[in-house]
Image (tube, rainbow, N blue to C red; front, top):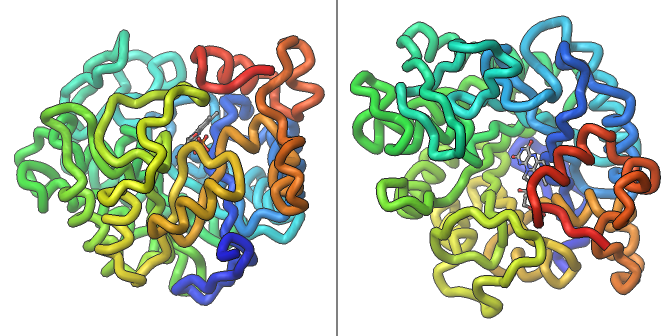
Length: 379
Ligand SMILES: Cc1cc2nc3c(=O)[nH]c(=O)nc-3n(C[C@H](O)[C@H](O)[C@H](O)COP(=O)(O)O)c2cc1C
């Protein structure tokens, strides 16, 4: 089966199998952006299953771009925390990849302070209670690109095998690409090609910072559901340009890998599957086609079994990122490997007090997971 075979990235790094732990924010880091011991335990236990790679929770690159209480990769003061994280992620032989992000218009005022929120344009997101950000100056845009570069350099120093740019899920890099969030009239906005400038500049900066021998990846949302959002064709063009930068992989972020068309984001784990048949027009297939082997393709969303992994691979993915299934069952991969899928835990314990202990989930992360009904299944 392909899922258990190795793959060599453009950088020359080899991944032992196609299973990757998806980036999973814990909301449980120390206030200064250093990693908490419970987060290291969360990662170590899950990585012990032998994943080919582990991607970290998203690390902020600037203090004013924090969307939750997570890890930072913003300055030298974060270096030893990043070193400890890299060590925990690779304890069982996985490649360790640091995901880096900026929150832009979905940063959290409680963390960054009132009136500090900056984004491509002064347009609020549609999220309930969203505040209107301030439009970034051209200098601030350049500064943010430099902050991504610096974060990638810190990752290299800390011993990571690579860096993933969080260009998905409505955070700042996604915002620059989105006609809904980016109304700029300078070189960073306006036409589709100008809206690509920021994502491409960040990708180039990260590639330069990590050098040719570390992994550089980019996570993309393949389409926006809203009528005025970007379409799969736009994302295909972006991925084509990203592939020219010799990225090691492009990761397609979906809430269900079987999804073939834009729909409002559903975060319900056991919600109805939109389509059970392999759709001809899967965004994974479309993006894999345009990338045409120049970078690996990673897919995610609703991967719960080995058959799901093979299903995503059949659609054109080379790698699969697994999120909630490994949150719920830390031993998920060991069970998949030993063909003992019947014993995979279907949900977190019903008794909330049991969750942190039995599942090695930081208590703050338990609160975070339970704050959105249906996001994570319960027994
Ligand atoms: C608790 C939690 C935290 C997440 N944090 C991140 C993150 O930091 N960066 C990111 O790109 N995606 C994040 N995601 C999205 C996951 O990586 C994944 O794409 C999503 O959960 C769908 O895959 P799944 O069905 O396997 O969970 C998070 C998801 C969950 C459940």
